[in-house]
Image 1 (cartoon, one colour):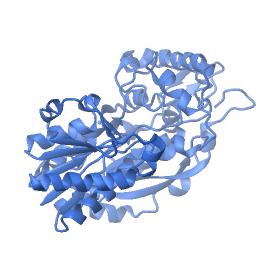
Image 2 (cartoon, helix red, strand yellow):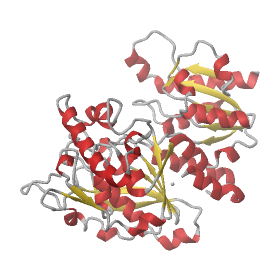
Image 3 (tube, helix red, strand yellow):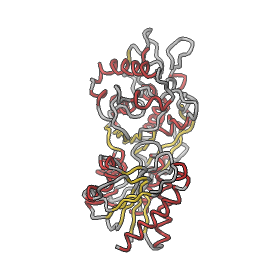
Image 4 (cartoon, one colour):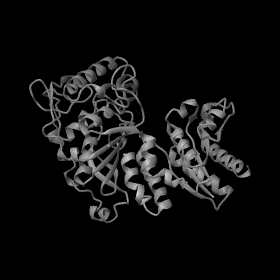
Length: 436
């Protein structure tokens, strides 16, 4: 018997990687000879790189290498992938150019990667963190394709309690992209989400050679606080490798760039902005968007996903020519999930809250649709399953759904015992499946 585990995380509680470990233990305790593949799901937000790394390991286990079916692999890859400006406090991006000089080539041997292009490795580089402080960040690379998670370099988890969205910068993300380009990446997948920034990606663009100029024609690296001081920008020195590279952006939201549903009003408070800051930050965002629209048109402002990661969704579109797409579809294509489903008896997925919105293009709906096409049963194990009519879900390929704890105990108590409840519920669900 073959079972695939592909849960999304229980947000702020259990990661998708840990859920796979717990579920696998439960299944093997019931039926030790079961072949279990762990494919932790991430939709582009924080934790995506870790999830993809483990998912690729499962793909290797299943196919014998990371490329899956060689006949269909290339198709799957492509479909799954496309500071203050004042004199006394100005940050020059030239002053940051040396941060990654020591790592122009990674400490990983590229010659080894070239010998086995199917194998992804973690590459480490010295780049600027959210406040332009030197940090080390990693990305996955297989010799031609790089997978970069923005949260690994400019994530809100990196700033801790020191959240100040007005002064954080996406510059380090641009450096990491530049590092991948210098190593020969021809396709770069960017997972956006969990960022500490709201700078419309101009920090990222600055690291890649785009110039942002103040009213005195002086170059500087704008942050959310100083976007309003940008008077002009110049793309003549942009990194030429950008235009020979396919960029694919994984987004975990559909928010536009500006407005009540945009990057600032929806996410800036989580990153340290006060209610009083929001109009100022929105005004700055509108200002830089107006300047950029003179070159790139206005479509990037309203497109779905533009507001992801403080405007990085829009930035990757206009500065990199990226294709924005669903994080779950990107992941499933990348690991050849359809091929992995062959000869599978059961898929177990889940998320923190399972309800009717779960059918609207989210991770579970994408998994269930593909499993249904292959005739594979799907069970959902959720922190909370809020469903009145399961027939609606069966039509979408979901055969059963379980809540890990339906008691009336306080939420804090439920969280404390959630790992145990995941184990017990998975065991029960698998036993029920075997007994049908």
